[in-house]
Image 1 (cartoon, rainbow, N blue to C red):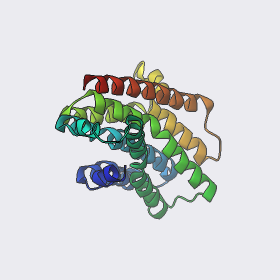
Image 2 (image 1 turned 90 degrees about the vertical axis):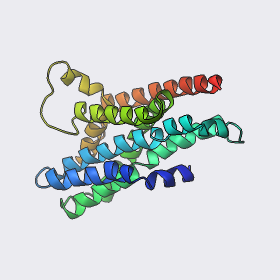
Image 3 (image 1 turned 180 degrees about the horizontal axis):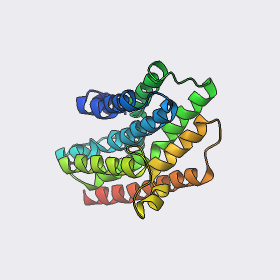
Length: 229
């Protein structure tokens, strides 16, 4: 897991996409009266993108290169590999979330007590789990560069429908769908914590549902992948 995290952190595209971009968007549009809500939105941006790309970004390439077949010859158990990739996806959100938080404090003059800062960080870490599982599923399903493109497309779709980019109501049925999208649920939970309230049960249930479905899909796909070998 340490090897994979270090490898990802050396990827300049990762740092630009998941650290520089949310911090830059916050500095450009998030200051002023809406500084704190903008911080939460960009933290969710970093958490969703970090989970998706952190866990799934390198899996497709490793499959194409035969690296996963090599791992099957080592004492590393399947459960250890899967757990390591999921934990990696969760850990990869830390640079982006930290960068947005620091920008909010020093440029947006956001002031929260220690309890709310801790609650927000724990929420982002836990809330990134369904995205890490989804990224891993895409990495195990798609191959090579197509997987990277697919992960980015899924991320921007979730960001747009979840309200992380843009503003106002969505057209037609999309406005109803957004309430069942994990990015929207995580952002709403973050806004609740920001106001000193407990996150709503509906939003937490949506995140839990995505996590359970993602875990089941990853296990099924991994068993099929292992059986193919």
